[in-house]
Amino acid sequence: MNGRQMNDDGRLTVRTALVTGGASGIGAACARELAASGAKVIVADRDSEGAAVVAAETGGEAWTIDLLDTAALEDLQLDVDILVNNAGVQSVRPIEEFVPDDFRRIHRLMLEAPFLLIRAALPAMYRKGFGRIINLSSVHGIRASPFKSAYVSAKHGLEGLSKVTALEGGKHGVTSNCINPGYVRTPLMENQIADQAQAHNISEDEVLASIMLTESAIKRLVEPEEVASLVGWLASDHAGMVTGSSYVMDGGWSAR
Ligand SMILES: NC(=O)c1ccc[n+]([C@@H]2O[C@H](COP(=O)([O-])OP(=O)(O)OC[C@H]3O[C@@H](n4cnc5c(N)ncnc54)[C@H](O)[C@@H]3O)[C@@H](O)[C@H]2O)c1
Image (cartoon, rainbow, N blue to C red; front, side):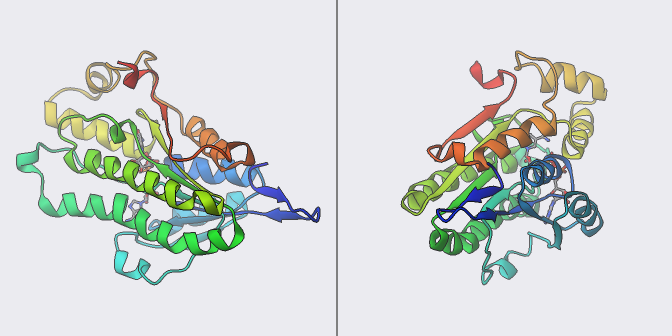
């Protein structure tokens, strides 16, 4: 059971899941997966139209929010059972050309906002004795690539945040884990291919063949639904003893 839980008295409780960046790519696939397993899904995204489409499709609700406005998250109280920290962006530049504000923006969205959302969600999870924090990290949470200083450092930070959450949440029935995909077929990825093509002055096909999939044993992109299925499992009762872990889904990239 992912989104529904049988109580001691035999009643069925519907779980609520908040998915950030749920309007597109991996987040939208997660919203579909969790809804299919019975959860009520809140699709949080700055893209209000996209969030409304996914919310309508999954029978959930849309929450239009710009997670870069972290001051607004400081007093937030969330009553959700499953929190999927997924919203993310990328910027590809050598360090000496990396715009400091872009670095700060990426860390705010991909590290500070997850911290504030976890902080907002834990009290209700602790009261209920159940919670699932699922952080969309990346193979770049455990490996580095050139030109991605902000992204790689934010994801490495997210790994640490996830482990601390696991240690604090354990006695309250709250688990926290990371998922570390290789390159996934989403709009974020399509933008990266275009950026890399520009940075290296090569075609987009060459970017895939000679940069992105060189380390992978399996030479294809990960599909969003494959990532979402792992999210569904981590959210389920079967994964109750899984915490403080990071699950790679990278076609063998990090096996090297
Ligand atoms: N695509 C990949 O290859 C890949 C690989 C590993 C990890 N990831 C991670 O998976 C996550 C999702 O990536 P994706 O590829 O599905 O991206 P995507 O671009 O398809 O979707 C990201 C979503 O986040 C939303 N978002 C961006 N900034 C926001 C903000 N300030 N406030 C609220 N919402 C905001 C966007 O509107 C969009 O709907 C990211 O954390 C990314 O780092 C992606």
